[in-house]
Amino acid sequence: MLKIEFLYYNKTVCKRCASTDKSVKQTLKELKAAMKNTKQAIELKETKLPESKLNLSPSILINGKDIEIILNKRKKPVSNHCKSCCKMVGHQVRCRTFVYRGRKYDHIPKGMILEAIKKKSSKF
Image (cartoon, rainbow, N blue to C red; front, side):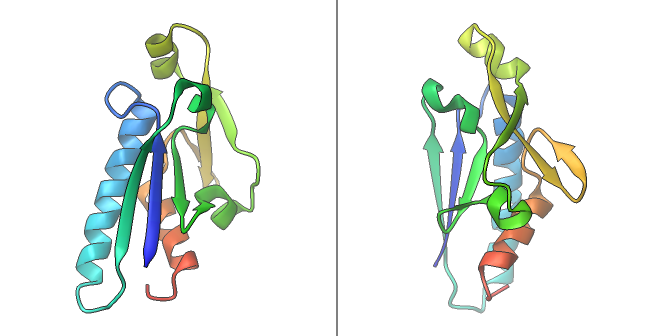
């Protein structure tokens, strides 16, 4: 069983969360098609974070381990000013950023999700 948990603050207003949600959906669609003839199952859990944990948004855990730890060995999340969430909550906040293949992202790209899944699962 491959367990993917997507943690987010607001997928409707926050551009980072919405873009990551799109990446997650595209990734799962591809994986399910590729896994048609295997016995491997995928479970997706989506967790809405409270405002007090907004700095962790967006995040993806694969089998309980953060995607940045899996790929970049980074234990502490990196963040920057998030215009969408600042407008939503009415004060300055910082949301997560990610580094994938030498490029900085404000969302989690599909390639990053696929690579982390491949590292955590021998079935792909």
